[in-house]
Length: 485
Image 1 (cartoon, one colour):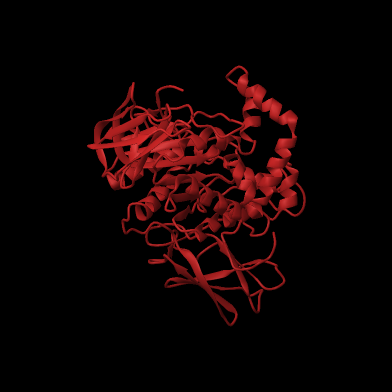
Image 2 (cartoon, rainbow, N blue to C red):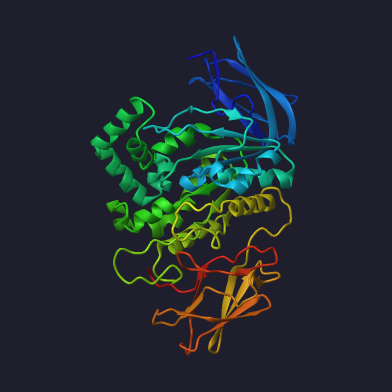
């Protein structure tokens, strides 16, 4: 073991999290006294018998002036130059998080206005076991992710603080790819997956062969790796723990939705109702990450899947706006279960997306809305950061009256009656509702239903919606029925 090493997330140009204690850790010869100096603080720790050491820097205020982080052992010293203090967020998920800045002109146009945005992009690789180090370094440059950069840009504008983004994402990866193995104890279907993975020697041998073989990988090998469970977490997340950060932005779900509906044909999904379990899995995943970071207030910003519609290969074709046929609506409902935990937010994208393209380019509103929620939740600014959310539905003779929270200035963007509301009775046959806006409520009725009982709003692959509040943030999709998909 070297006399002294510092954990790989610490490099020149790093951003350290403000307003919370900041752990700094690494390895040294057992018994070595390690001293960390930064921003007028001097903290020491003794490496344990396993050669591990860690110190906790006291909470610091934001500072855009470059400083030096020094770590000294008995025989050597490591210094990191140009270190700032600000807001640090991990941005993770699959291809829509990876989607390039260059592909979105109105986000690329923001680059000249960025002042103190830095990025640590984690090298995309895998490992069979949890690793202690990773490849990557902090750079004085925006992340090459349209969502992550636009989020960072508007966060910096609102808070006037340096922003550090740790980008750890990989296209077509499932949530299970980012789960530590010990979650087999809390998520039954993940245990099934990992048991099958352990028994599949051909897959395991192929992974080792690809990782130890020549690079760059072929596209086929690349896709094969990123679609495996657990091994992305091992290589790309575990070495980051417990780097101090405000929270994590999560843009993922397409892979799990596709799998549920048989497009990728993983048999365990049909046995375990995979997509419908996604909400519970997401909550367990959030809780496990918070445990790893030792921070129960670590904030999670979940990006709802935007509008998209893939017609079914068989059966009735009801269309992109019908509230019964498309998996995206059910995944959005699962994603909203994250709100059952404290310190979570879900960014509503129901008005965005592309009916034919799973990788839509309207990423700018996503970044703006993420920043609004982060400013409200993490910075404590009193702003309206979300659209109307269904609070209750009142049955009133042949009408249903929907009451909303976050509904000040409730209106429609086009001045027409609210769209995308559907009604049903116990027959579960859905019909478009006639709608009327009354104050902060929407009144629903249908000449086809004498006694409507249930309502769905925006509960479709690509609904046509127009309901917003005074901040022009869209109303969240919902349903009040309990019918199965």
